[in-house]
Length: 204
Image 1 (cartoon, rainbow, N blue to C red):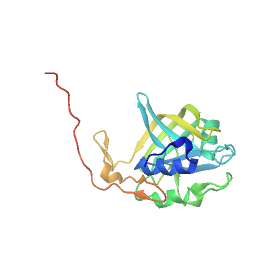
Image 2: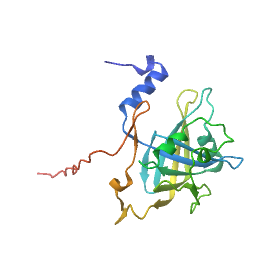
Image 3: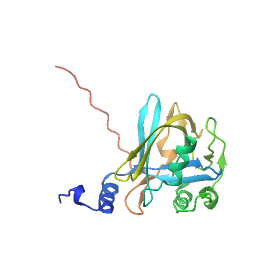
Image 4: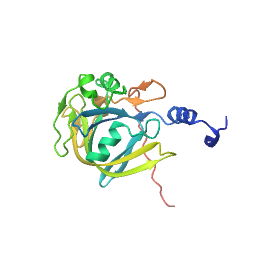
């Protein structure tokens, strides 16, 4: 099958992207709105983009008519947010927060989640997550026609790692038990781990 995305409907391209770019890590983002409401929502268009300084990027799709989602609007206003890592133990509650609640309703309360203060930013972090990245907005890019997406690049200013996961400067992946996003309503657990050392070029 050969497909030209320029002649494809937007939703058709979306389905191909989420069905081919996977598994995707999930950024469970907490942010604070103008009225002080704590917002929380999961996003799977997410990854690391720099290590010096450490930076993380998340693409937040806009609502119909090019309207900002609460997460993007909050981050653009406050310049701060927290990424809470999704794992097997918290994914059910995280899924509750994906509902399109009105801005005045806190998804954290609806999901029965609890929070802890952050160290550097004003946005609280989710206690049920074992890893948190406190972030300050580094750059914002509007993407797509309309535009239809906000690319949020955050500089990581503080990291929390549960003591049970921390091992000599590394995070124990198996103990973290992260969850990945697939297409549709499907998620994936860690599964089998395959180790493959990177080859080294040796000039003859």
